[in-house]
Length: 138
Image (cartoon, rainbow, N blue to C red; front, side, top):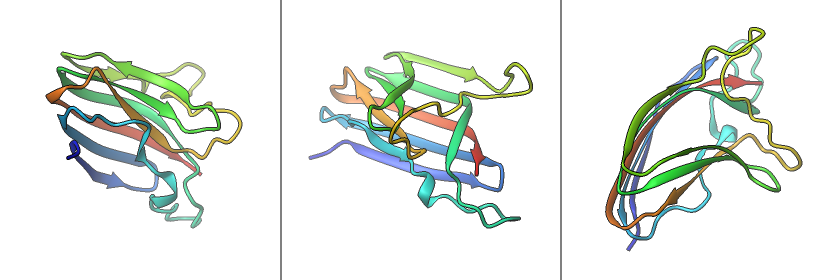
């Protein structure tokens, strides 16, 4: 058996990406699963350019029994953040300095723009629910 996971794209526009993810664990967990595959996102409606990366603006999550880690995919994955088990919160990264906002994808060698998720301390019956608002970059 495997964890019961869902992914839902709420908005995939020219600038914004909003996605929702859930997991009801059977104890298996998720390991470096691509939650945002930039190659599958809509292209820029003005130029036709493909999305190459995202920057995370805001994340809403609720974890019961387990936590999760998000990584930028690269030759050596780069951790973005860790959401602790038995915790719910909204983290807003949209007000950056020097006119920049969000958590940029700063992964180095082998970066492909994708966002990966790994569950932490998962056991049967644990859950997470998460929504991500990101800006798309071309």
